[in-house]
Image (cartoon, rainbow, N blue to C red; front, side, top):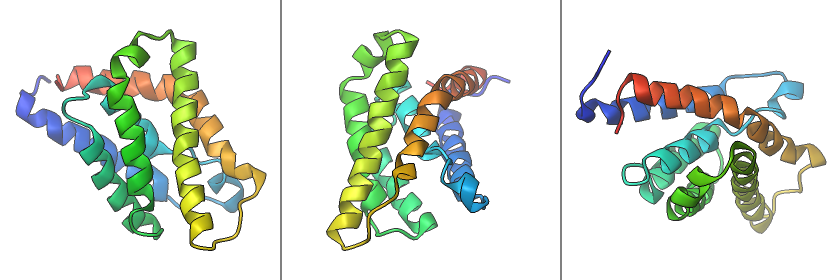
Length: 162
């Protein structure tokens, strides 16, 4: 099914909505700590693939929506995802030229950056520290990056998102 360019925005929104759903689906506590940053992975993909359509403003809006959905301090994820989007858009040509293993490590750095900003805001407002398992979602996101990239790339091609 080949959709026109105007429908590309809808496909991008649907992928972000799916990432949000995967983020808020209830899981047992043992599995919830292992949940990857679906929204961050989706944002990284679209910023690397279409930096002129998905960039810092998109990261901010998606972050605000994520703050509302997860009940965190308003602007916490917005700040972190805006920062990730900025880095991705600024370095998109370089990151896309990396081999797969370097892209995966770059995604790890970006996901850790997201978690560091969230941790910084949490500590600034006086929330207690997190256990060592706090960093597992970034590692799992890094491991899932090749699969997420392939799937979102196939969605982009199937719907001719440009």
